[in-house]
Length: 276
Image (cartoon, rainbow, N blue to C red; front, side, top):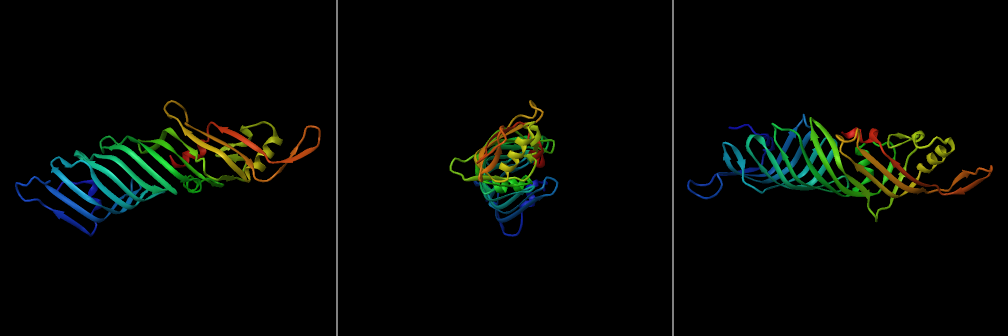
């Protein structure tokens, strides 16, 4: 038998169909009702995999086009996806072509188009569309030290190169109908010291106070090609403090009012590199 990465899928309930000699059907069909996959080196694991795998030939090993499969759970590192389905083809020498895939994850839905993987050429990339992703769950995935809520959507190009994930292009922005907030008790915001934003100690204190409970009106993160930029993302946020804050005046008095912030961070790399 030819050794195949997909062999790890086989688990318990399954059915093999071998067509009669001379028929026009495919040479062999494997029907799985419950499958598992595990790749500890790549931190990949899946279960509840089901589908029919129609094999066109064994030498080279190739399936027919447009194979469909589903899964109940798929893990990539700390990311968990559920209730997924994908359209794929297996090619010679372990090559995998995924035409399209979609699944639930991070509180919303993710879809992917055209991913081609070959063991001899491990570098590959794909575009993933994110719909209604929950910021709270995304923040936990990034080990973000603070509380954040709301929903974001967008498209990001993922590049896997030399066992490293890069995000060369794309953006996530706050959904217009989303109620969002940021609660951060820190002298940093997304890995960038507040002292890098202004030289005014009084302004830093005001920003710190506002960030402890900020109502977000706009939020976005954009990624750029790391081969063209030393690093590769920008974060934008705009909002106002939920509570009124005392603001010192130049004449020695003070005013009580909400604080409005409009911040652009050109290099919040400390946050994003946690998952790259």
